[in-house]
Image 1: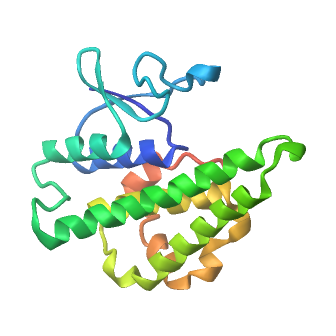
Image 2: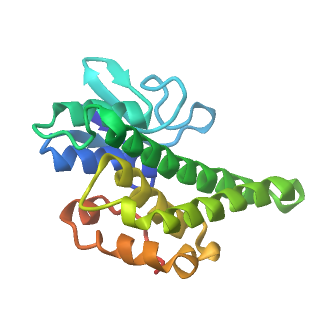
Length: 201
C-alpha cells in the first residue's frame, strides 16, 4: 500500500505512527504542493493529505477513515470494538483533530498579507487552541499511554501546535499535559515520524 503523507501534517503523521504500531509496511510518498490542486491532485479530490492507496488506484481519505482502516489490519487494534471506551477514544481523537484544525486555520490566516488579516478569525482560532489545551489538561489522567486511538491524534496535534502556534506556549499553561506528552518522545514511532525542523519545548 502507498500512503501519500508528510510528517509535518498531524493528520498524515497519525497514519504513519499507526502503521508502525501494527508493523504494516507502507510506501510513504511525500508529494509536492501543486497550487490550486493542493497536495494530491488525482489521489484525493480535496487535495489534502493523507491519502491511502488501499487498492490499486483507489484511495482512502480522510485521516480518521485511514486510521480506522489501518487499525483494523492490526493483530491487536488499539480502537476498542464497542462500548463506552470506544466512544471515549473516538471523542479524544476528534478533540485532537479539532486542535490540529484550529492550528491549521490559524496558520493560514496569519500568512496572508497583513492588510488581509481577519483579526477576529485569528482570535477565534487562537481561542480554540487554548480551550482545547485547557480541556486536555483537565482530562490528562484519562488520555493514557502508551498509544491509544484517542491519544494518537492528541500527540500529533500538540506537536503541530508547538510548531505552528509556538507563541501560545501550550506547555507553560498545561504542565500536566506537557509532562504526559514528553513521555512519548523516546518512543521509536514518535521519533521516526517527527518531521519538524526545530522542536519548541
